[in-house]
Image 1 (cartoon, rainbow, N blue to C red):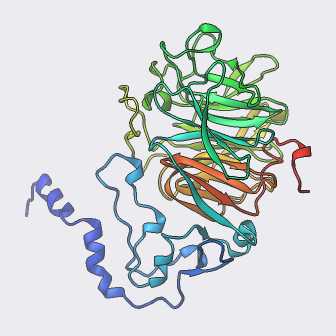
Image 2: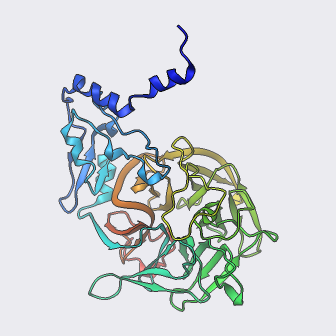
Image 3: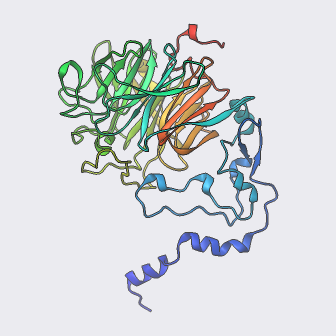
Length: 441
């Protein structure tokens, strides 16, 4: 019997995936032999351990299909999986920490882990989160058109953290990534505009800038590639020789902070401040984003957030970003071998795929564990790529940084919120803190 293709397609797609799964659920309501989730660890936080990485779930589990919305923030997460046959799963969505590897994960959490919502902020993306151990301040930036101040968490004083604003001199327009080295912040600045002021009385250009948090003085290190300006300069890392590796993608234009349509294709770049030389290191990633080195500088981690693509028209300034999103496009962290005495990138392999949204905000701990901002929180991974712990947030997590005297506090920034987390996972040594300010071996 002949059935027109369009009618057959409609007939096939009429019931939703969720409706089909819910209809089948009563057929497999037998509880599993052991619970998938259970409370564990110290009582200072809501900690849930996942047995066997939840590799085998009761057959009636389901997660909602991708919605019609193009907003990546609407995508369902791992914690929102529905498992009617296992009541223990109800613990997962409300947990502060989800532990996948009990031995290594509980060691990461330590004796008194905490996770607390610290500040409500504008519901826009906030990144370039970085700490100055001398001034005891956490800097981060709001990624929106015309924003030339930075938000600062002042950790000094007995009354607790204070959220204030500061403006560099000259101002920095929309930094999107930052690190601390040698007493200075090094920022990837994404904003460009004909009306926003830049250095030496000129206009704002994307590039690499330093900022002295004590004096407030900023300086430009790089703002062109043989006459081209970079599209974004999204995030930044520094190797053991002082060379700067940075990602350049299309997001400043898509986020409404750049007046210029991208000219250069997205890529990973290597810049030598000593000579001024800048050259391409990799051009295979769709939208290279977060970037960080292993403690021995032999490995470079780069996040590809290519599942979120940038429209070819400038969006409205000052709005939460809803760039088109394709769940089958890359949202992967890549692991590169650094070769030729740190001059080039060698073997690359996909290393971590996010459960939800897009990978960003890469940081590396002193022991080599990697932190990745993944939208519904921060994933903590081993150098081999094993997911050990997830720090969950009630807002979209983007940037993160270590802070505090013992280098065990982590501040997380994102869309609408700031979270403070305390773990037994220091990160001060590998992130450039001077030895005299570290009180641990």
